[in-house]
Length: 382
Image 1: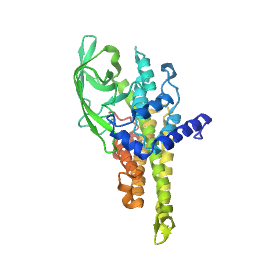
Image 2: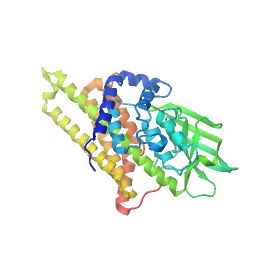
Image 3: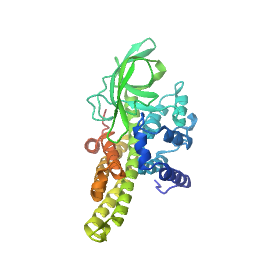
């Protein structure tokens, strides 16, 4: 796989980097997370106008039909700017689940609305005892009701759930093996939610379904097809989130290097102290290792072997999560007291990496998953 940027990818990178430099300073980010949605609708509309929300959506639905290699170019640049908008959740995670479903009425129209920013989709899958999207019981039920079903149950930690116009909900259908995935309008009768902030300022919700009616075309997948579609979509979301995490690590490395060059101690810049330069070298090594693992996971997405794809993605998530926490933590330490203040960006990058570490399975889960795939060659269930 060629990891050199194409001309189109360079233009995408330049566009995203310029937007981050000009419009995504720390103060604008702090204002965005104070909004009711936990992100900026102004940024969201710009993303739609630039075609970023439609980047990986199929051309048949008005998308650009590009691949994950293009998505990680965009997400790395946005990660440097601590972008908190739900591009990964709506366009990549839910977009992939919807686009891969058997053709049913209205799906292309919904994908087009996701690409234009007029619709925002969120995955409602994790339940109370679930460790992550990969490892959660599904006790929410879909009871037959005429030609459709009625959803009953609660989903926890639905990222951007209070802002979503549509939810993709997992539920058990009576008499069937595994779970099914349904697309549901977030404003449907019987849906209530409890909204709460996360450590990085973004928002999630616990969503309660009380006899929520869904029609037959609302079912996207069932049984083994649902599990396979979920694995594929989650793997793609992890790769995109890992690119944003890498952008965060790079931003912390750059601002820490600049700080050490300008901060004086004993009449000399901190960058002249050997112990600190060694620490910066370690930060560089961790960041470049993270980049290598991201590229390995990206290459694996093109493989037909789902076991190898899962293994590479888990290996990347485990390493990048640990490296990201270490790099941003070192950035705080090297800045000293200013590193933990609300007015300085390095601490916000650390919080963003904490959310990345825990979402889609933490490093411990992915190390276990990777080891299990190496030992048995079997694809783990949900």
